Image (tube, rainbow, N blue to C red; front, side, top):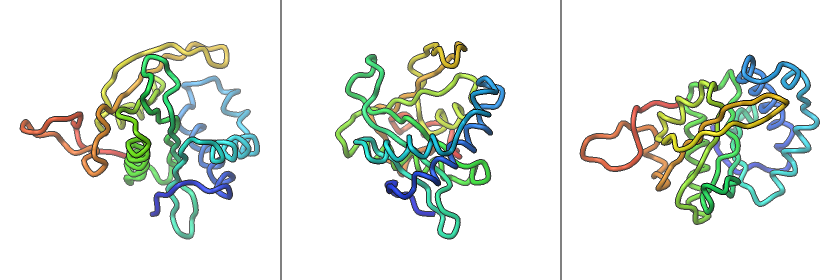
Length: 189
């Protein structure tokens, strides 16, 4: 598996991963018409624009299979965490989950944010999304909650924070009593 910065010609594959993963992950969490109405062509345009922007878009690319995961990050959009970085998206195709690809993409984005000069990273996730346990296992600390009105539905969200940004090789490692830092409960996707 290669973890790399996305290129313009990755937009279609990213759109496919995004739609497939949304439908698998958010069934029962967001209104059904939202999931059934998702369009790969619309997502392809969105991802092409995001790749061309100043945001960082990373992919998990398996030789012979193509893009199987995507993550994006950049400047935090929540004023409460001004100056921090934000992980906007992190999705791995259902057939490729629980193999460490989410962990590797998360590490790549945290490295990119550290290189960009951020000292912390925030990630918002739906409170009922089981992926929140992955973010806890990867050392994210629950720091805020909010209610978002999306698709005429109120959806509670939880923010996880990495501060300071951890060394990527330590993500998910169980912390011992002698160690400082945000790591606990080893594991990962």
